[in-house]
Structure formats: C-alpha cells, structure tokens
Length: 320
Length: 282
Ligand SMILES: [Zn+2]
Image 1: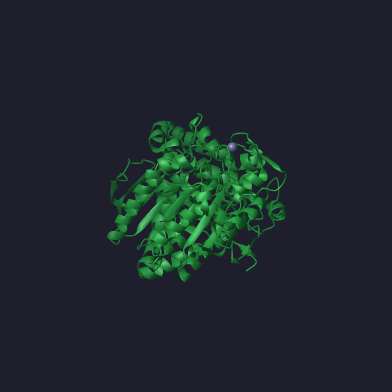
Image 2: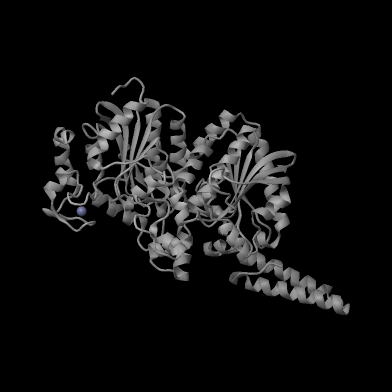
C-alpha cells in the first residue's frame, strides 16, 4: 500500500477506509459492495481533483515520493535477461548507477540507470542515487560497449544531484560529467533518456545527452533543487521560499516540453506512478519501443547530426 | 624577465583591470601594494604571488599580440526565457550587470594572435552575474568552437564562473550539453583546444567546456571544482582541508596539465600551440 504525502492526505484517508471495509467484509461476510463503489468513486474524484491542480512543489514531492518506483523496479518489469555489469576499470564500482544488458521486445539494450534506495540501508549503499566520478566513467565505458556491438542505449534518470563530496572532487567529478556530455554527443548508436523521478542538475545531465528525452508526467528536471535555489536567491529555507523557487525554476514536465528540452511527456497512472508500478513500467516500455523503432531505422550519421542540432538549438537570446 | 620587457603595451592596459585607489591590499597576505607596481607584475602580488582578478580585456591583452582583433556576437543578449520570478527580477540583475561591466554578457569571444598564430579566443567575466552560463554564454562558446573548427584556428578559452545561471533554469543546464557537443566535433578534428582556468571556476562551467581542453592550464591558487566548498562542507559535515579544490590540488590529483603563473602564461601557451599545430615550428 502506497504511503501518502501531505497534499494526498484525503486520498490516503479514503484508501484506508476502503481497506477497512474490505477487511470487515471478509471477516464477517457482509455485503459492502454499494459502500465500496461509493468510496471508490470518491477516490477517483479526489485523485483527479488533487492532481489537476498540483503546485510545482507538490510535483517535486511526487517525483521524490517514497513509494515512487525506482529504476530497478522498472527494469525488472520491462527488460528480460537483465545482466548487471560493474565498475569503471579504474577505481571502483559505483552502486548509485546500475548498468547492464537487458532485452526489450527481442532487442538487446544497454541500460544505464540511477538507483535510489528504498530504506536507510539501501540508501547507504546507493548513496541516494548520487553518483561519483567513477559512476559516470562506468556508464561511459558501458555505453562504449553498446556502441561497439551496435546496441541502443537507454538511460533512466532519477537523482537529486551528482555527489558533492571530498572524494568526488579529488577524482574529478566535473571532468567525468563533462567527458560524458562530450562523448555522448558522438556515440554512434541510438540513445534514449527517460526521466523517471528527479532530474537533478549536472548529475542528471551527465547521463542524458540523447536522441530522445522522455519524461514522466510528475518527474522534475532542474538546474538546481528548489531548496538550493531558495537558500541562494531568497536566502532562506522556508516552505514559502521553496514553493517560490520551485515555481520560478520551471522544472515540471510540461515546462520542459514547452522549453524544447524534452520530446515527450509520459502520462502517469491516476494518482501518480507510486499508485501503480506495473502500469508505469508498461507505459515506459511502450514509449521506448516506439522511439527505438524510429531511431533504429535511421542511419547513424543522421542520428548524430540530429542529436547535435537538438542541443545546439537549446536556449533563448536576442541580438542576432 | 626579458619577455616582460617586450610587452610594455600590455602592462598599461592591465592597469584598467584594477581601477580605484593608488594602493591595493592583497587579499591573501594582506600586503599593501602600489597599484602601478602590481600592474607591472601582471597583477600578481609581489610578496606572496597571489593572482589578483583581472578582467576580460586584461586576459585578451595578456595572451594576444594585439588584444582582440575582431570581437564576435557582442550583441547577443539574454531574454529572460522563464520570466523568472525571484527576490530580484532577472531582468533587473541583468541590467545592473550590463551597466557595471559595460558588456552584454559574461563572455567575450573573438579572434586574435598568439605570437603571430591566429586563434579563436574566449574569456569569461566573473563580474557579470558571477560569470554564470546562461543561453548567451553557451551560444557564444558553441559558436567559438564551431568557428575554430571551420577556420582551423586553435581555440583558447579563459574561464571564471560560479556555474550555471539559475535564472535561466534548465535552459542554462542545457548549455553544458551544447558547449560540450560543439567541442566534441572539435575533438574529432586536429584543431587544438586550450582551457585556462582562473579563480574561481566551478559548477556547470567546470563540468562542461572548462574541463575538456586538450590542454588544461590553471592559474596559481585558483578555486576549481564541481561543487562549491560550502555545499561540500554541508554535505559531509566537516571542514575542508587547506588547499582543497585549489589549482595545485587539481594538479596533484591529475586533473589539470599545469599550474602556470600569469607572467609565464602566454609564453607557455605559445610554446604548446606550436607543438600541436601543423606547419608551425618553434
Ligand atoms: Zn600577497
């Protein structure tokens, strides 16, 4: 059962009542069908209402929802024969990013996915999906492997940021990200990036130079977190400042589509991806297959030329 | 310093880099120095070697024979694409920077010569909203890389930046991908790209074009990193060791090719260029 955030509280209450009612019916053999129908209708209504008018900060909370499906939850649902490969061949394996071969509709694919933990122990291992330089280098090594065997690459983006720590700086976090941006623009095989949850700044970008970027409806993608922006520009960490920052940054999927950064918004199950992992995964699988069909039909020169133009066009200015 | 004597013209120009009083205080050792003497020494503290900040004109004159011979894209301006609503409007901060600096953006690009060899040149201006990279900065740098590729002139970029320009949101982030893609094409050619890192170079600029040089040179003492020191301290909950993220630290950790004091910057770049450019000899 999904846990619920503050703005989903009334949804959570109805979900709980439905649960109780079903238990009661089972235990005592009561006929509760009418009442159940009424409550389920109410639930649909509430979800539609709540999700119709989400503020940008509420969308941030959905993108970070503790019950939101993470990369491995999606990978196990849509890829067959997934085999994880490890390490950057230089320093260590970075568990914040999971890389390996998987098969989607008969096609072998290199999957590169940022992995959050579900609890403290997992997060200790996964470092909250905040990658170190060796993670970006592992990803690049395996993207090169995909290129060598002419297999497409799918990256799944879900990270608050690249890790800001001592070791990360010592080992060249900036260089590792920069190198990926450059190399990904030249890799001679299709690349699709899917923003599943949080697209946290350079940490996300370092895996998302791609031919296509698809983004879930309530995922976010931003140059800085609302918290970081609030503390720098508003010089405070209040709820109000965070709300303002989240709105000002234009970090929602519709914003990114409008700004020309992403290619497609993937609708989420009613009430958000956390309400239905299976449906979420199948929606992604459908979109990935569709884009792969299209990209794999194009010569590699055309892919690279279009990939270049895609990023070359981004931004807005006057005075030309 | 024989080279220094040849370059009299540059020195007068560099005085402009530090306007104001006759005296300047070194922020590193506290020494009070006569500005004229400081300018004669490339704005490097005579006592401790601290490199005072100089402006883009200062670098153009330091590195190029006759400063910039042609400037490109000087009319490109930001347009506030998000209509960013902050404590101060982006448009207002932009106007203020424009008035203060007298230029339209945080990077200056153009063409010049290094000891006779034609180069494409770009230099960032930290005074302009912290040298932050928005759409215009990204666009000008991408164009500089494309010009270098087309003209086969080496590209030299001098960086000074706090990172991405927050007020352009995700569009500023995408400039990292744009500049790196443009450099990707340059990397596939045999046109050299030199990246010179000055104090400070952090965030999205470091994590894109600044760390992608065929040769990366840092100025002594320059702060260079991905995350800012304060963010790192907050994350790890401890103070950072002395010298962390300074140029010498990066050299020790294999992240830059050289740390070069300002007086030797041009001769070093010139020597390196001639090793790497066809048909030139030294
Ligand atoms: Zn000093």
